[in-house]
Image 1 (spheres, rainbow, N blue to C red):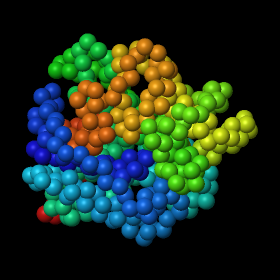
Image 2: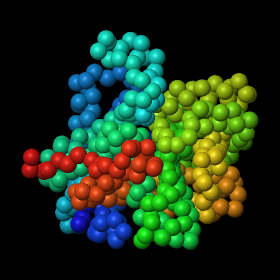
Image 3: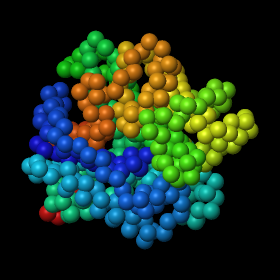
Length: 400
């Protein structure tokens, strides 16, 4: 079956679109990438998405318009990725996350202004996650059955709704004689830990996963601010590589409660976004760190240090190898710093084992859609914290 996978991550770089050939079910799953492309958002739309992610107020009517606009560009990406290829039978669209509140996370002070019918949540309340880019509109515009809203069922079952791709990582990267950490570095970092087990037998046993903290989110925001908007990211980490790291500041930042919270756990720009960066920049100022390169080097070190700290604190054993994917896998300086933190553990990319690092997440949502269509649960409760396995995603038929 030809399936399209679509996602725009927390970096809001654009829409990753993949065309994937999928066959089999679970243990005999076969996945082949036919085409992959990243399609940038129009600048004005990206800026609006980032503003909403940062907490900007938006009337419901404007939110609906934004939802429709994102769906339009996702549909266009789905149409474009099929150029020169047979028509796909299915689309799996993650959409664009604009808000993520994990289960049990306390409400902000803004809830003090809530109306009487919006009571304060208890610590045991379900999480909430909002992805824009409505699946029904994508199905209508493309004429292809579309599955979207993948996180909702896991959250309703008491899970974090993240990370979503660990079950697929287990199939793609599990090895009987070698343990691995598949480390995605998008705006937020997340890992899948795969113990050394036979993927044809007990392939789900011992699989773990959680969000490690900031990936590129702070770096991209800092680059935009420090370059007065000229740059949107640090290409290959070249700017940060010219700076000096303040290890004392990194140690200070690592005291943040999220880094010490045991899994399952997930996070987003709500925690590691503009407000957190402002505090980091204030800390840099207090510490006499004023050079842009030094600030970027220190923020990059935080991402590397938080990943290594997460492994050293919460994994049963350090992995035999680390496989990077996502936009951060292209940041050579970040990769070097993570390698330094992990000593002799090889830090590779999923490209090195035959899975495109740029499009691994989009491929995963194509597989999740395929599994949903075949009534196969897509979550791993040991990773998300859900009470039981569930079918992920809502199905929208193109004819409805």
